[in-house]
Length: 197
Length: 192
Image (cartoon, rainbow over all chains, first blue to last red; front, side, top):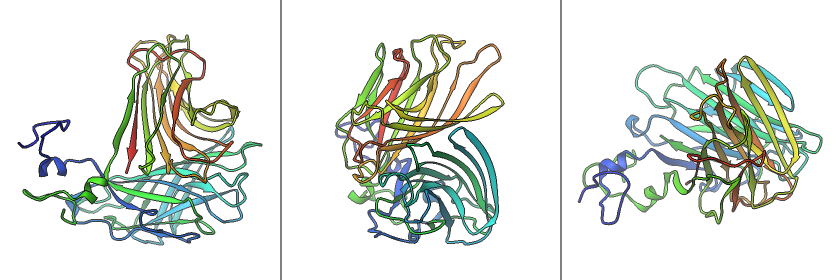
């Protein structure tokens, strides 16, 4: 019998309407894709299309780089675009709150991760990002909200929580995402997963 | 399954598609009258974990820190960083070498209304990794709604830094040793 409601119980048949109502589907995972390290960037293949398959993109990541820094910016280029990215950032580090903007950049900032000079080899950075309306009819920019945590030098104290909003003015609908560190390469243990909502 | 992820009448879902459905509920915990709760024996087959919690505590406070511990480690090896706004004041704090890391704040009996709650969304990316410290990033808030109407908006992150390893147990606790009260709830989800 066709599924009447939620949740699914024994002997229900899950029909196409129910399947089309599923909220989130994993579109890409760098570990499943077999990315090897060190790697200068991680790019998704073309994300599923056409328009009405999903509307928003959501991603989760953890990363570390081999750059000679305690922390390193994690960047994102929608559709591989290397221009026209704009960010507003809010940061908490220790007892200090700061904010900053980046104009006309080559990439969107989505967070901070640990670099090779972090205090411990087990330090990484964790974060998530959302591209609401990543696929929409009509004219719009690719727009982002993101947040992250990175620890770098914890015995004397330095942790970073970062919040970003951003946009890329040369990208409308998003068909791929490229992730890269500001300097250096990502190392083993790094992982990016992208979901369609 | 068609490549555009939309199903037509009569079309079948493949195993690959069903295994990409996210998230999936691992467990629910509704603590009442206790100071701690745990999600244990967490399957190691997901890619990431999402914890969602909402509730109150029993102490006379406008906000008790809610702590997280990984793998039952309760020694002073946790670090967290907090960024928050309260009314018109932004601030940041860090806690080093603590016995738990903060994921948010829940109000107690000093909140103006018994309906005021705190809440937290906690992500644990790549939780099954064995070469990184167990860690998380969280968004949280609470409203304790004193006579002037007050709440917090928070962004937190933290880690256990004594040993790398996969997360198999997550423990939540009140950092002031009070109890969670009725209608408090935590759900743990696995993301495929």
